Length: 363
Image (cartoon, rainbow, N blue to C red; front, side, top):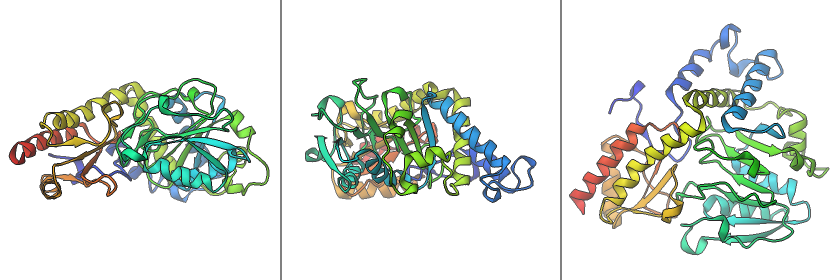
């Protein structure tokens, strides 16, 4: 294992890795952006230099993800967790919404929405500790203002692995942990949101992609910082935004465009995950995946070992071998390998080999 700058294989669930070329370019522009004489974090967000950065962030996001003209792109603060509240305040509006609860983050979204209106649990996977997801499992209302789901649950490693049906419902999706990891059809969604810190850049920014007709539904009288219409009318700069975070996101978008776009990224991530899943499936039951087979995440692989002693031994020995942040969340136990876009293929290959050797020695 030899990574640039003595970096480690960081399997953290978030904030996650950022590709080295992006970090290098950001470093080179930190003190003096493109000869402007000022660093990105020091320039006015109303000035001509940052106007160019903001325009490029919008352009590259649209190009990478295929965002149509009838959608607005917003770079907001507060992360995805603030969006749980913000979208409910903007769109419940005295009505109700359907929620598919397939993991911990979906559960948090439900709890936030209930503070602002009626929520129908169209599907709830809590009884099986959130190991399954599927649009066909929902029992939907006829009059829901929107339908919300979390496409990839970071903690449980459960993913819908596809877009919602084109059925006329206003689907709102939390894509925080898998956005830009594979091709998807923006037209299937009324709104998409994602915290940046897993696949898009540093923490502190939430990307929102929202259809124009949804903006038109926002009621009057909301707090300005929690009003999508206000954010659209002010080009997401009602107040000073996270200028550095958005700049990093622009570089990340451009990197993956140059990589070949989401088709290439999707194939890359599928191949990366296959090395770890193959090791699990080849361990004769020593390792077990939490998610049902049809819902195995390509971003967060949650797995268990036969007992707690072996789990601790695995975590100790894997860290000594150079594999960091593999401890699973307490709600699932075991281990979790988060392999977002920027996580290198070589780390997945080497972890898979380590896992097979560990299973053979301890099984």
